Amino acid sequence: MSNNKEKLFSEFQAPTTQEWLDKIEVDLKGADFQKRLVWRTNEGFNVQPFYRREDLKDLKAVDSLPGEFPFVRGNKKDNNLWFVRQDINVEDAKAASAKALDILNKGVDSLGFKIKGKDISKEFIATLLDGILPQYVELNFKTCQRHCVELAEILVNYFKEKNYPLEELKGSINFDPIGKIMCKGKDTTAVLEQAKPLIEALKELPGYKCINVNSVQLNNAGAYIYQELGYALAWGAEYLNVLTEAGVDATEAAKRIKFNMGVSENYFMEIAKFRAARLLWAQIVKQYEPKCDCACQMHVCAITSAYNQTLFDSYVNLLRSQTETMSAAIANVDSIVVTPFDKPYETPTDFAERIARNQQLLLKEEAHFDKLVDVAGGSYTIEHLTDAIAKEGWKLFLAVEEAGGFLAEALKGNITNAVNASNDKRHAAAATRREFILGTNQFPNFTETSEGKAPLSSPEGDTNVSECCNEAPSGAVGGALPRLNTQRLASEFETLRLATEKAKKQPIAFMLTIGNLAMRQARAQFSCNFLAAAGYKVMDNLGFKTVEEGVDAALEAKADIVVICSSDDEYAEYAIPAFKYLNGRAMYIVAGAPACSEDLKAAGIENFIHVKSNQLETLKEYNAKLGL
Image (tube, rainbow, N blue to C red):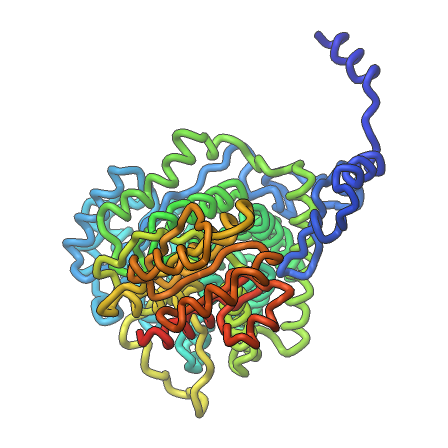
């Protein structure tokens, strides 16, 4: 077998990169290589259609091993196990405990408890954790920032009383005052004084993280990938500065920091983001001269995005979160929270939470993603993306540091404003269908209705707090700070569609297909997708011999909108006669932007839809004309 293999390689010469490019040029038949095959990312760099080993020759990180500095290939050496986490909003300790015990028997091995500050007490925690064995389960807690130290002390005493092995326990307390500045628009820097006491309170629990970087809130506010990466690094560095300046040992400080990061649908880029994050964080911590390289490890909980979830066609959210979960798992994160598919419009049901759990269990038990260390390592494309996004994230990190650091920039509102600007750009891109939302602005379900569903208030990622943190602490700066805009990408389309649903009559859009078969079918399909995004009933047709026949059929169907679908050349023949014959009895739309558009406009035709149209604004305009 070995001899045959060697003979095979000797008989076939490997093509060079130039030979591949020459072949591609031939296959493109004169089309522009850069425009057709090179992808320009939102992060500011180009991605080629293929990569080869020679493209990695200058990348130093590819020579490292899993579990070794700079940890680009993960923190683990012999497996890719991660915690399957589910969060629980605790209203009643006994009920939450029962739910926790139930889901622990269904595959979860990490629990996240969100507790109101006013409920924190020894008795409450004892009831909540009754029956849970913390040496086998990762426990994560979130409460009012000013109750974190109290919570830590209660937990340590509780674990001692139960004689649990303190050295083996793993978990976290979500202390992140800086995150509140951006999500609440209030100065919470006074609470930072509790960071050192919190670490001291947890000194007997070495496996507990307590200083959190919740960059998931940036992800859920529409931040681009390089922004979440760069800002998360600067955020973490800020906490390192705060802690070391307060007298906390650098090694101890670094080991107590946890990153709760979002993961969106850009599959390969998200894999690269987590790899780049570990690489860069290791370099940052190294500058503090920790006692061991293990302090340079970045510990990440990945949370699938809520920003791209939709109310309509909500089961598509399962497809989004599944690829997001795959990205996180392949990228070797420490734990994953899958956001239930129904979160945009209701408190997640038991069914939705069950599916969310099973999405991770499928990757573990069926796909065996937990068995291989750094399965992405050596992929030329992913290694290139890791390097490229690391460079962009590092640029942003340095820019924040040069401006005075993350805290200073957050207090000026610069971080929030930058992310909100990205959110605005993404909403504008969705409005013009430059960013697709499957089932919303692209390929909507024509017959779907909301069935009473209504959007819930925008999420704040993983940063929900109890009422006591809504009050500005003493020492707050005067004037309100900007808040992150967590309006989901699909929200404006959903508002439009819900308004259509409330109308007394659902508008009917009738396709008057005529002329060239291929063009009329293509334009009818485009128009149906375009108009159905507003909740209109669309009626496609096989074709009509005359425009009069088509208009009569539309009126018989009680159409509110008539869309003529033909070829550019034939519009000069058909568009104006159809418009005149319709005579204002329904809204008239031309599908396309033909060369004769000015002539059509001169005849009184106002409405055109095509690939360059602003879909959202156009549909708002049509709703207004229809009186919706």
